[in-house]
Image (cartoon, rainbow, N blue to C red; front, side, top):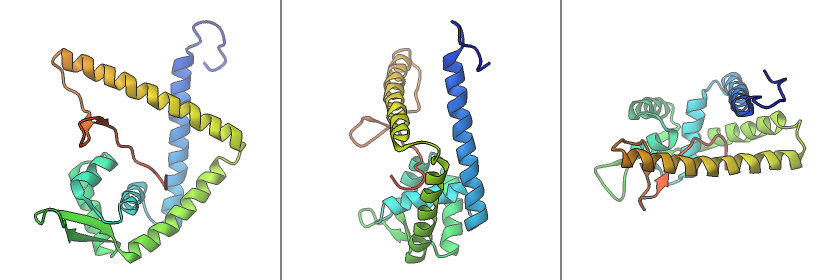
Length: 186
C-alpha cells in the first residue's frame, strides 16, 4: 500500500498508520528496557514522572487525570510504591480531608536513575536522525497537535450543540485541558 503515489494513494491513512506503528515500536522498546534494566513497568515510570514534576505531591484524583487512568489503577500503584518506600501519603495542607502522594528520597533517587537512562535510550533511538530532522519532526508534530486541539474543540461544540456529551476535562479556568502522559522529563 505504501508504494502508491497516484491520486487516491490514501496518504492520510498511511501517515496515521506510520505514526501509530512508530509510536508502538518506540513504546515497546522502552517497556522492554524498563522491565529488563529496572524490573519496572511503563505505568510505574509514568506515575513516578508525574510525582517528580510535583515536588509537593499530588492528590490521587489529579494523578489519575494526568495519567489518564482510573482511580483504582492509581490506588493499586500507590499501595505498591508506598510498601516499597518510594512514595508517601501525606495530609493535604489545604484540605485536611484529602491526601497527597509524593516521592520519598528513595523514590526520587531511583526515579532520577531511571529518567536519566530513559533519556539516553531515547537519544539512542533517535540517533538515526540529525538534530535538524529531529527538530523538524518535533515542529511538524506540534503543528498537528495544535490542529487536532482545534478540531476537537469544534467537534465538542457540535456535540454540545446537538445535545451530546464530550469527554473534555476543564481546567480551573474552564478552558479545555488535555493531559497526556509525558515519559521522561519535559
